[in-house]
Length: 161
View (cartoon, rainbow, N blue to C red):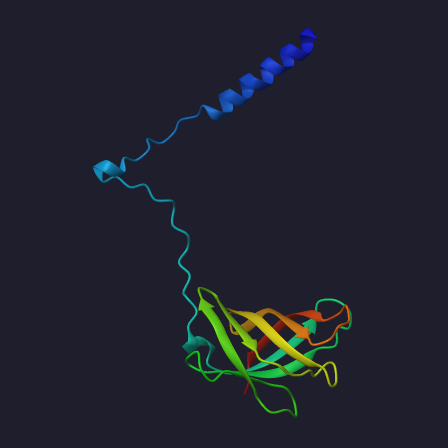
């Protein structure tokens, strides 16, 4: 029992010694002093101009059938007029949900699935511009009552010629 008390006192002493290091004087905002956290490296905010153009995209499901789906993403220099075009299909309007910091979020209305014939689907994707490539994820929601009504994709693309 005595050994347990000695170990407890030793651990408590070590904890208090570690926490009692020198501390910076807190700022007093009433005197106009303000302490700010260290600044993080500056990151340029993503813009529509950087994204505008045609992008050759490739989407691969995260699980299951990993056959890639390709499409052309056409981005304009504003939030209006974005489209997704699958091979041998008409363009599908895409709505920019949000452009913020390093990413853009888009979504489509309902369209006939390329992966599942005669099944309607919608898609929501998040892209980040990394170097000269768009990298991100997409989620398709299929209009079906089966268990696999949602498919997640890894997406990557580069400027189309």
